[in-house]
Amino acid sequence: MHANGTGRNLPQLLGDARRWFEDALLATLEEAGEIHVSPTQAGLFAVLDEEGTTASELARRMGVTRQTAHQAVHGLVSAGLLEQVPDPSSGRQRLIRRTAEGERTHRRAELVLRRAEQELADRIGEGTVSALRTALELPWGGPPVLGPPEG
Image (cartoon, rainbow, N blue to C red; front, side, top):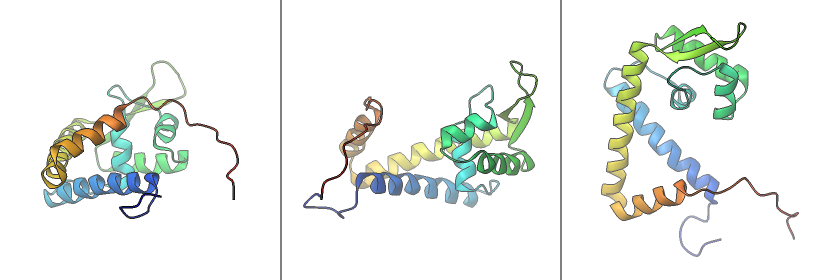
C-alpha cells in the first residue's frame, strides 16, 4: 500500500484509466453524430486485424466469451461498420473485418484517442504521460505464478 494516493491496487487504477479513455472516445463520437457503439464494441474494433479476424480470436484478445464477441460483432455488422467474409485459410470459418464506413470510424476514433492523450498530458504533464507510456510498453514477461498469500 502506498502512503499517497487512493490506496487502490494497480489493476483497479489501470481499469479506471482505460475507462477514462473509453468514455472520452464514446462521448466524443456520440457528440459528433457517429453511430453509437458500446464499450465492448469499441474494444472489439481496437483488436481487429486489417485483413480480418475470426470471432473466436477476437474473444480471446478481448478476454470475453465467444458469445459476447459474437453479439458485439452482430451489432457492428448491423450498423454497417463490420462485415463477415469467408476465411481463405479455412472453409468453415469467417473473418470479421471493417467496412469502408468502419474504416472511417476507426480512423476518427484513433484521432480522438490521440487528442484525449494530449488532453491528459495538458492536465497531468507531458513527462508523466511519457513515463506512463514507457512503463506500459516495457516487456513485462509472462504473468508470474506466485506462492500462496501469507496471513
